[in-house]
Image 1 (cartoon, rainbow, N blue to C red):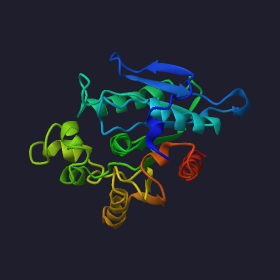
Image 2 (cartoon, rainbow, N blue to C red):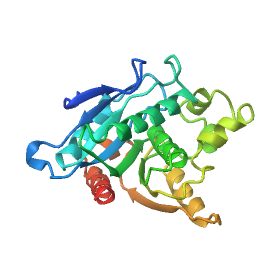
Image 3 (tube, rainbow, N blue to C red):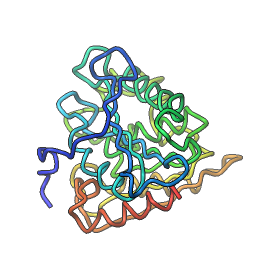
Image 4 (cartoon, rainbow, N blue to C red):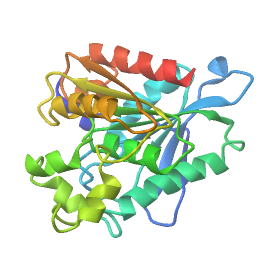
Length: 262
């Protein structure tokens, strides 16, 4: 499929909730229909959209995958956040928003009938970096999925991906702001608690498939006291196929998420 998923209007969310005072600090919540509601709280997928951390891209395009997962019985929270180009965006403000939204959902789980024991955090492209970073910094995250994630920020800089998007996001090069890279780079972070699934399309020409492949290999070989639970799923697909419910690739993404949320 083409990248028309970026411009196709998404299905309407059930609720738009603010988790902060900035206009970009909100999330779209979708809940299963009455026919699909279980007696207990709903498992929740927290989705973090991509766009190389830039304000040019918002959460709308991710509404399609959220609606598809909600149709399968999962609640979904599609996060918006301050991005490069927004006041307060870039590091650390962008990540601060992701943490705030996560805490907001935990604090309001009873009000919205959400099962805080069955939460999957998922992110696409730059959102994959933010999802794994959240898992590293929030001990409560137990299941995380990176879809074509920018999971190696040093390499993203070396390859100058999207015209040095990582330099804009982290406010400098690795030599200029080494602390930012240490704090934000999933490749460098210890993420021992959650189950991690790295899913990548083999035909991805936006984020090279080697990012996920090498991340998983490096984490599995790392001799830390606590080895990370990391799995790789490669699919014959392009970058945006992984977030487009109309594609054949989506079925494998959906199945992985449903298994993690069970």
